[in-house]
Image (cartoon, rainbow, N blue to C red; front, side):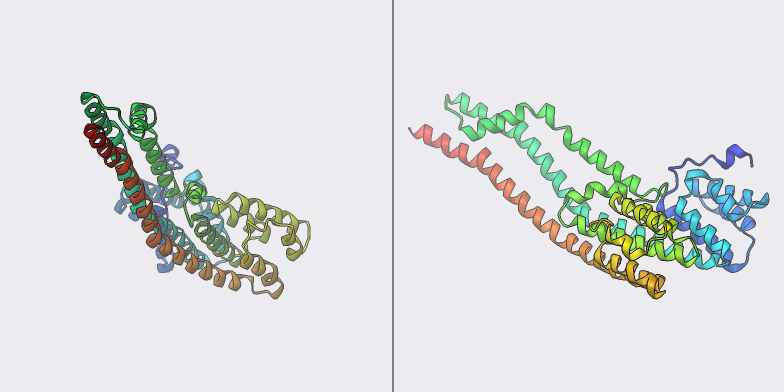
Length: 359
């Protein structure tokens, strides 16, 4: 296979699910003691699409004498930096199977968070889309007919109906905003499923929705704690592990706080003192306490694993709450809006028309 064929995969081509499948394949081959180059070449023939091409490219590189780390690095940005860092640490410490299993848990946790958020949001978005279509139809089709009825009877249309008529007359300027917003949301969601940088930065727009800010904070903290534990467990230097784990979340506040903490530790400052000046909104209280006390007690990795379970369970609970309550709130809001529009567009005009005819 030529060098050009080896790099035929674009950086944005591999998804989270494909990364999980590739990692599971490599982990199974390592556990079984099968030569990676042979196993990946066979897997490349069985797997379809870009994932199969990546597996074949890795097998070809390994067959030419490259190590697994070198083969993964040769794929450029198609393989996330933090994935490469954990594999390199696991290979260097002689615990590659354990590192791959830890990566599998972490990537599945990320995928689980994304699925939970998507499940909680799809129905409310569907209701909003339907309400938007009905509103556009009301102001552009129904209201003009009422106006024509008033004019044909030489009656004066009520003010609410005139307001809706004006909105309908300007619909050509604002109605594309809805479809454009849906397309942008779809693009952002598809990008969040890519493993190019393996970050949740594409989810930042979700913080505008009710309860989403705390939900995302919990998931991001859980991901940070789990990856930091995984990196430290495989002897990645603490300052570098902090930055890598924070960058995987995509939370800019957390990334900035982790870099500040990393620089302080590199200068020789105690972690507890460095945390005192870190952004308190970026590092949640329980995580701050674990980072400050866990290293002193020598049990930081175990404490981070426990913290991961805590924050992930809390995030699941909030996702379930969002899944149950957000549709109810949205249904009430849409129902109230529909009632108001019905009154403005139908009930009030009909009553006014009958009153004028009677007069």
